[in-house]
Length: 264
Ligand SMILES: [Mg+2]
Image 1 (cartoon, protein in one colour):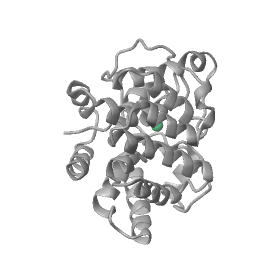
Image 2: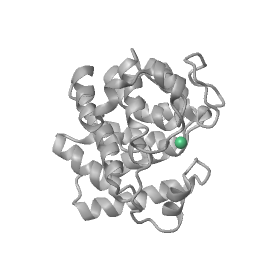
Image 3: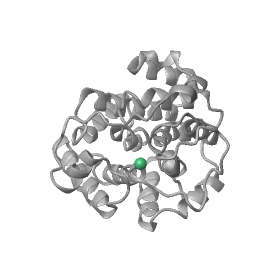
Image 4: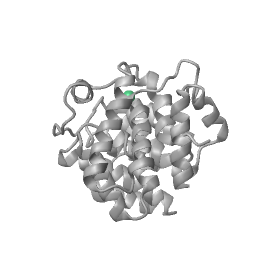
């Protein structure tokens, strides 16, 4: 059994999205944590790649829209933004979004792809079904590429060097500063840099996610993004995955098992 860092980050951050905590002291996963939209879409993308990862562009696009809608409509109260909710339920066509939803769902691409070129292609196709703004495409690709780089055994410095090609201002940020001044921001360009700084300063998967909660903002989504990278870089303790699995629908676990059987 493997529960990915994006899902665990989402679960840990769930109760802090609208009640920011801004401290690293808290129980990591408790009975009142829950999964949200970030987990639902991450599992949907894992499902898409398991069945359609080798399909051509048109078939992959069609399957992405269909499965994201199927998964999303099952959980109407998972925390969707209003625009994405309209996309899910009324009209699933690209709407120029640069919301951080592009990045929170994309980490399975970093696990699945066998080359940088494939990271870019899969990330672009899966993102452009909804978040076809240049910042949405960039945020998703940066996240997927960081996961891919970690999988390829790159050092933290190398991973962050590539992140800074996408977001050059990242070297000026620190968790201490973010803790004082960072505000709720649901854009990709306002979410990727702080999430990656939390990974940069973290010393383990759990420490990375604690950094994220401590800076406030859109906690579950930032933790999904940073957690995805920290997962591959550090691994996640079995005990943490065992706590998370209790909070997930059984079929999510089955879908994730099938996905990781294929990619690990
Ligand atoms: Mg959420």
